[in-house]
Length: 320
Image 1 (cartoon, helix red, strand yellow):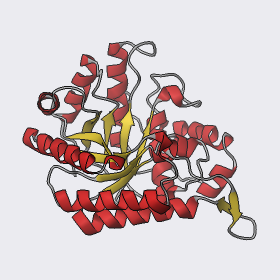
Image 2: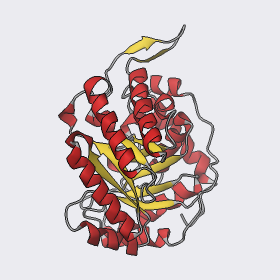
Image 3: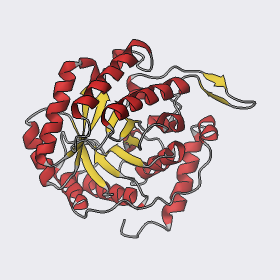
Image 4: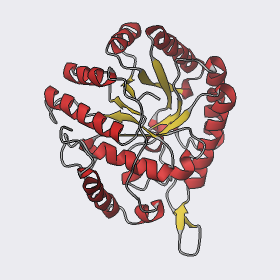
């Protein structure tokens, strides 16, 4: 399996020209966002973007998205609306070769925070009250897509889901999924040693793999253009993160985002993509249980990051 290199994409100009440029760079995938709450209009946009990507020789990850004010999407009428959209989208595109995977919800826990609170699940244990509801949401949408299209499925978790207790658990959320996804930026991570630290994203990938028991794709990484780093520094950061994610056995990584991408970063993505590396087998450090991890936040994040740095110190090539 090829290590996937791509970008996140929001249509704002000439989609066909953008996709031609992305393809010319040698990238293989665009992850884009589809508003399921727009119904037929969303379906039309989905089909058009997948068609344009296919014409350019690209694959896509359509990510279902919605406005933060939509409400509780995990049950009731809103879940039924998502399932109806998933059914229609899956039937419309089925096993389309330009779809790498379906993403059932971009940054879903941020757009629609699950209910708070804990319930007793054992003699000395508790679980988030929302965990089973969110897991049922994932299972419902995943099974709908699987029935309609048979393509791989993931869900758009973010760094907040492993650095804070957002009341979901990756094991139950990801059980029906093909692979887990993670996205994050150093500027939002308290443990990062600066915006150009190359290890926080690989560490987030490790947490995701350990807690989900699934292969991991980094579906969004990068520094905002401007005050945090120069264009050259961002490009070097991009390459360093890709080197680490590949060495750690991840499935690939997508820059955030195509809009405003700097030329040196585009060149760095292109250079790495043209190496056509194959995914390697992970060799991750042992991890604590997710129950203990979430119970001891935020100390557990910093403690494990420090341990991760020690674990990888001798494994990283000097040049990276």
